Amino acid sequence: MRIEFKMEGGFAHFPGLSKPVRIDADQLSREESAQLEQLVQKARFFDLPGKVNVARKGAADYYQYTITIQMGKQSHTIKLVDPVEDTNLNELLLFLKKKSKETRSGRSGQR
Amino acid sequence: MNKELNRVFFSPSRAVRHILPPHILRSIAEKGTSRQRARALQTMAMDNTFRAIRAGAQAKAPLPRKGVRALALEGQKQRTIFDAHNTQTLPGDVVRIEGSQPGSDLAVNEAYDGLGATYDLFWDIYERNSIDDEGMPLNATVHFGNEYNNAFWNGERMVFGDGDGELFNRFTISIDVIGHELAHGVTEDEAGLVYFFQPGALNESISDVFGSLVRQRVLNQTATQADWLIGAGLFTQNVHGVALRSMKAPGTAYDDPVIGKDPQPAHMKNFKYTFEDNGGVHINSGIPNHAFYLAATQIGGYAWQKAGHIWYETLRDSKLRPNFGFLRFARLTVANAARLYGAGQSEEQAVRDGWAKVGIKVT
Image 1 (cartoon, chains in turn cyan, red):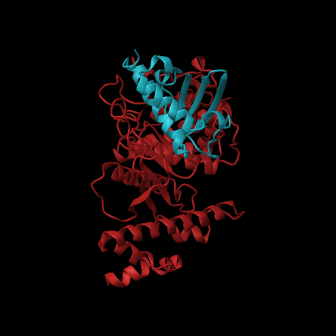
Image 2 (cartoon, each protein chain N blue to C red):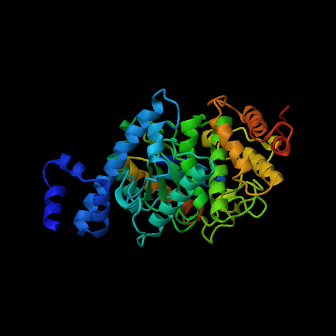
Image 3 (tube, helix red, strand yellow):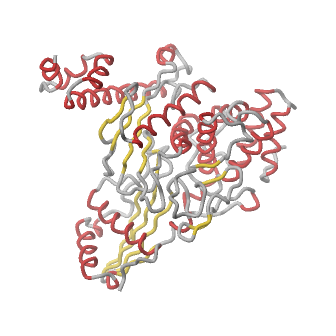
């Protein structure tokens, strides 16, 4: 399973924080790989619409996320904005944010 | 009395709650048992919600602004702070209401005070009664999300994260960030500037302008004394930077190996064409931000007085349309400077010069 995760927007645009991050499940530890697979399943990722939610009229400074997951022959991309009300999807998002942070600070946890 | 209150609050009929007048609820919120306090706070918050719905309906009605109803609420702040307890569920629980004493939670107190200072700037200086000029209640949620690195306006409330502690501190730490979020509500109410490309960058800039003016007024600084930073104190010590943005010197607020370099231009020649960040709304806002800084410092004195007044009247100008870009907005600021302070006077010249220095020529 391969994931591309991109975060943009927010109160300020930070070039270093808006670069897309790629996560390859094969490169994760066995525990993390299993955890990721479970999160993707629980979020029913491949059943989600391409646009999960949109910002309310007049809203500003919200984060926007683009997540692409490739699993076997399946590939799906979703876009969403904060606040994310779907708790299962939010769990997946928190995992991806954590991994992005580790990648940025060089503590990738990768083998 | 406690038994009587329990009967009123915890009776199966929810309608009963609304018979208590606000001053009694307020007193319970201060002196009741913890369960009563919680229920009183909830009730008052609900009451505020209904007030907001009514105010919203009023704003849409084709009535002249500042009518009799508005007078009845003039100058009355209606702040409610909610706690999301590190979830993403809005609005969260009510933790502080208007008139109640500060507690031990720093973010709650900062949000409460920041909303107050923002309300006061708009009311004391521009005679605007809250976000909609009709006394709309001000609602903010703190402790949103887990190590959440952001503050945003969701279209009806301000939302603040705690920051991850690694790159960012809590987002209520800088009062201009609170003013910035509330100003988004004002912009939406008055102009509805589209949140994309140049109109979006203007929308962002207007929030920075009034956010900065809130801070300058609290600190009692003149235009030359102010640092014109947005979000000072938000970065932890791990980040090489002083703030999120600088209106005085856009592009210089931070330069860090992890978060990158401040991408804001200060001049049209460096305007960034991008689809990222809603078409660069937080990037190109550096240009109108700097024009405001230049105009305000050339006019001199307190920036919230003349320069702020000109920008505020431009925002209220019925000629300002949701799709306006920098040039058309700039023209309106010059026209409003002339209308307010006289054609050909130094204020009009300062506004014209401010825009010219960022590469926008108003003829």
